Image (cartoon, rainbow, N blue to C red; front, side, top):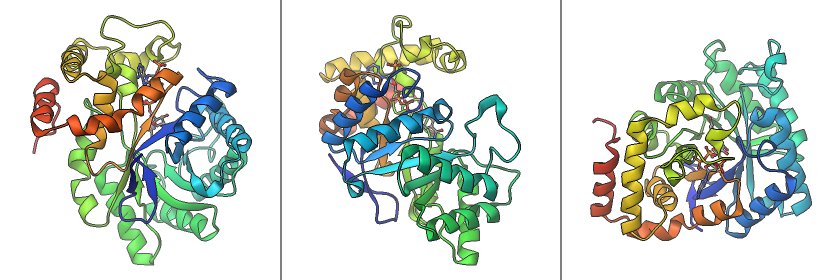
Length: 326
Ligand code: NDP
């Protein structure tokens, strides 16, 4: 495993990590989650990602039970949660979502309880909240750090301007600003990581824990000839996601990429994940997996890195045509 510093912080994350969105509680039960987290940890993964909204709190509870049973040294791994969407779904009342001081503090306490840990290594603002002054958010995150309840705080899917606004406030009041962002990044979605944040890596510094490196599985090639039973796009309630990805133009590119991966003698999934982590501004790619075979395959992405020569990267660009315009 390779470990990278999270932006300008001292924290080192494994370049491949493991997250629980969609999968924990909905698709996999506790014994499979236990097995998959075990495989990840044994392969050097030291970051596990979660959020209050995943399976409406059940994902954190499940991960918490696994962490408790594993009894891994708490200093050997990092775990995150995210605040914004709340966990009561349609029952959410005012103040049970968003980034008010009240909800951030309460969501933190609830995440600690569900995950059965004393502190979160990283606490993300799952989305920007344009109804809350940024001063309130930065002061609250700083408070949680001072209280030892979280160690680092970050953002998810914020714009570069919003991140810099948080830094302006942090600088003005001598508070700790956000040090990491969690954006989507894969061969089909590149703008934020490659364009919007370009200056921030160099100035204040920004780690990235990128999500959906396989575009929810599309870049594994599993949808090239239809939607397999039991796969994410076949799940009830995920039509919105399927409709976003199962479109002819994207499928056509993935089919071409799959053929190219074959030439390189590697599965297209590992090629796609390797492509994401060859970007030095990516601290870690959060893997998702419902099966042991998927996780073991994806963890081999590091072995594919040496195959990514300038010529290979150019072939990938020619196929995908997704590079953001300068
Ligand atoms: P991916 O894009 O890698 O998709 C993972 C899914 O693809 C798996 O659950 C599995 O789904 C399928 N898959 C994975 N590997 C293979 C393989 N080798 N062969 C075939 N199918 C495969 O990542 P996720 O979308 O799951 O995102 C990863 C993590 O990122 C999440 O768990 C979460 O922690 C974080 N995230 C954060 C978000 C945010 O807003 N901050 C948003 C989304 C995710 P299946 O078997 O069901 O088809």
